Image 1 (cartoon, rainbow, N blue to C red):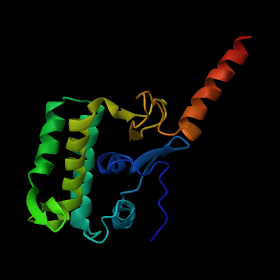
Image 2 (cartoon, rainbow, N blue to C red; image 1 turned 180 degrees about the horizontal axis):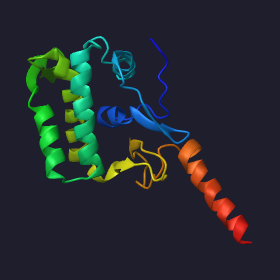
Image 3 (tube, rainbow, N blue to C red; image 1 turned 90 degrees about the vertical axis):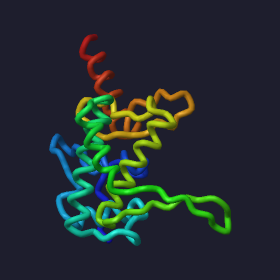
Length: 179
């Protein structure tokens, strides 16, 4: 499996899908330009055993990414909401009973729609739990998103080591130039 080149991984599935686009040296990068990148994203999220990294799956994932970007960047946007709802029409949750107790299982008529549906469903889960903690990085040159899990809910940067450090360095440089 090829290396995942993205600077931020491990976010909830919906935000991790958004983070398949990022900036590097002022140039927009995109992991999902082909099925190879889709395979990397599926593997990073433990979905590679369940879903194929093929052209139909890639098409559905790209549509879901665009729909999620619309609602995350402009919450309440009716067009974005309709686009996410359209993704959600292609799957459902079936209640199950297992040896461990009650459970749920996602079902899809077309397995190629599975990863896109799971990402959209994950976004609903984030909205239901803590919508105010879904954030875009505060650095003006960054397009990454994260779910703020900090205790006081004040995280501003996708990464303190990268964007947070750049912002601090910029402020320090601006102060030193003023003196």
